[in-house]
Image (cartoon, rainbow, N blue to C red):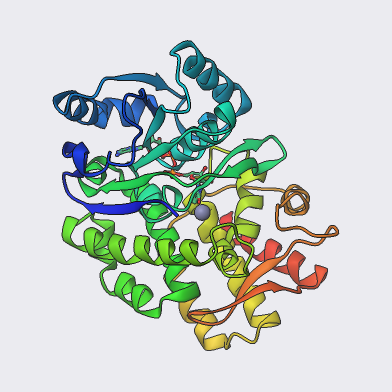
Length: 353
Ligand SMILES: NC(=O)c1ccc[n+]([C@@H]2O[C@H](COP(=O)([O-])OP(=O)(O)OC[C@H]3O[C@@H](n4cnc5c(N)ncnc54)[C@H](O)[C@@H]3O)[C@@H](O)[C@H]2O)c1
Ligand SMILES: [Zn+2]
């Protein structure tokens, strides 16, 4: 588990609070991407300078393009050139793409060096930046190469979120909604109640529900850090079909959170037919998910089904699903007949047109 998960306003300005676990004398390299760096890089770099910590910097490409072999190999070469050793550390400053890719580089460089996660997006603060799953993509699918590598600390400075667009906020809220659906009915009802304020980016509402979602995720991870105990898998709710539509769209037109909204809607359908989720509950949850707009796209059913077969959760050619028996009652690794999968995929592709 990470040594700590800190959440609050202005944390980036107080590095002494979260740099405690760093080996003395080692180098610290900030890894970010152009937009997050332009918006928040100077804040972090100057706070570190004031604390007497010298740093260097490397920028990954923006968005999902950070999560490629090419981008990571350039990062690893910079780390080598700057002389980073095992007593050095990486500080990842950015959204989930940066924390996934920089965390992965930290996991494999010299068989692993420490890293710190400073997520700057809502997706990052409620989900991606926490939990030590690091990864890059292959053309065939999302997150197919990666490692478990826990950061020394996760620092969620909620001031970073003030620059997010409504679309990016929605993506983060989708991951929080996912967590509410699988394990925390109170989180789900709180998000529903506060929805207009959350969408508008009201700091007090965001702060309150980020805390609840982030600590919920951290709890699941602490009980099942490597997804071997059948617990952490519940967090993949909506991600089987979600990752498949994201891959079929070609990583870009559909943001990850938007793909997860589609995936959750498909999973609710399957939950009704294969896990006994009452139709009333399924309809009610679906109505809530429909409040989250997803770009209109014409995806091919065959592309989505092919991507589904590449999913990490697939065993013997069969994708495995996380379904819901009810709110807060997940069914992990549910058996789903091929015909139901097709139906659910067809449903969601129809909804996306
Ligand atoms: N490791 C995990 O457990 C986990 C969990 C969920 C998602 N993920 C991964 O995370 C990625 C998605 O994360 P994301 O949505 O944060 O993507 P992202 O990192 O691509 O960021 C989204 C966009 O927001 C911009 N941005 C970053 N910080 C900003 C800020 N403070 N203000 C304004 N704009 C800002 C970025 O430049 C980018 O354009 C996906 O690759 C997904 O697979 C990983
Ligand atoms: Zn996700």
